[in-house]
Length: 305
Image 1 (spheres, rainbow, N blue to C red):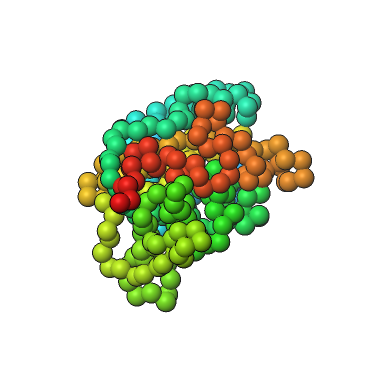
Image 2 (image 1 turned 30 degrees about the vertical axis):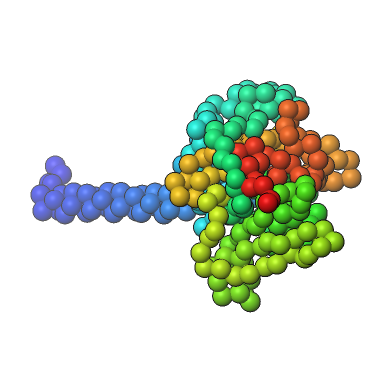
C-alpha cells in the first residue's frame, strides 16, 4: 500500500500554484510589452503594410487617421485640428476591386470642389500660415513622402523664400493684395513673423520686414487629405482652407485629388509633378495662380486709391 505524505502533497500543491502564478505573470508582462511595441498598430490604415514609415494618429479635422509626420509641427497640428462646415464622411466610397481610375473619379465626383462659406470685402492682405517646403524630384517620385503632393508640387517651381511666395498674392494688376505675412523661418530675423509688401513689376522690389504682431485678419493654410486605400491606388488628396484668425471660422475650402502612376520612366509610375487633378477642379495648371484665384473667392482684395 502506498502511503501519501500530506505534508509533501501540500508542498507540491503550493509549488504548482506558485508556478502557475509566475507563468501567468510572465504572459501578462509579454502582452504589455507587445502592446507597447505596437502602440500605433490600432491606428494603421489598410495599406500601411506597404508604407515602411507608417505611424498614424487621430485628428479632429478628418475621419481617417493620418501619418504622424503630418502633425509633427505646430502649423501641421493646427491645420489638422480645423473642422470644416462640410466634413468628409468616414466611408470614402471605396469598394474592393476598384481600379485607381474608378476610385479617383468617385472621389472627384463626391468630395472635390471649391466651397465658399463666407466672403469678405476690402481685404488688404493675409497670413500664409503654413508655407510648404520645396519638394525634391525624389520627393515627387515617392508614393508616401509628401503630405499633399497636389499642393506641394507647385512650390518646386519657385525658390523657397518669402519674397517669391508673396508673388502669389502681390503682383499687380494680376494679384492685388498689398501685403502677405508668414511665420518667421529665418535665423537672421528675431521677430515672430515676416511681412512682405511693396512689389510692382519694373517699379519696386518686394520688401520684407520682421514684425511681432500680425496685420492680417485672415489666414490661409493647407493640409493633406487621407482616404482609405488612396496612396496604394496612386491617389492623394489636399485642402486649402481660408480662416478668420480671430475665431478660426472657416470661410472657404478647396478640396482636390491628384492621380499619378502613369509616368513610364518613374518607379511605379509615380511622378506627382504631372499628376492629373479632378475634372471639375480649378487647379488646371502647376502654377500659383490657382491659389490666388481660390483665395479671392472669399477674400476680396482692397482696391487701390
